[in-house]
Image 1 (cartoon, rainbow, N blue to C red):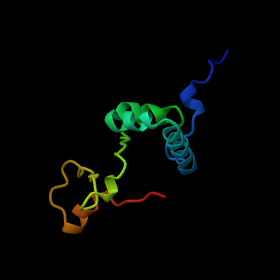
Image 2 (image 1 turned 90 degrees about the vertical axis):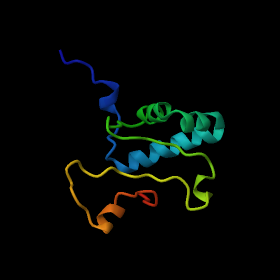
Image 3 (image 1 turned 45 degrees about the horizontal axis):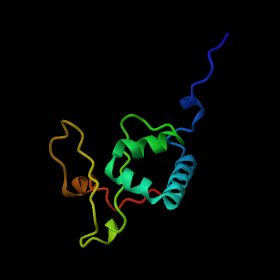
Image 4 (image 1 turned 180 degrees about the vertical axis):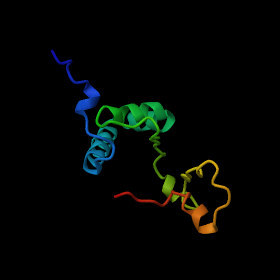
Length: 108
């Protein structure tokens, strides 16, 4: 007899952009109903991650971070998201370094 599928195996994969958009829409909808959830997700990255994990398989190496309302209006553009360079990269051109600065990246 085959073991039942785990709940995680029934969820869409993180690479499924439409599923990721739907998970985001659902979570933002819940925040609109209960703004305290948004405050929790800003303060607690694990809670934010867990909210997504109810909707979609989130790889272990993926970070989910919520920023407070109005962050983008902060002088200078708000918070910055920066990817670390690959270990052992050595030197990088200025353009290659700028590719690690992801704060203005829009995946949609």
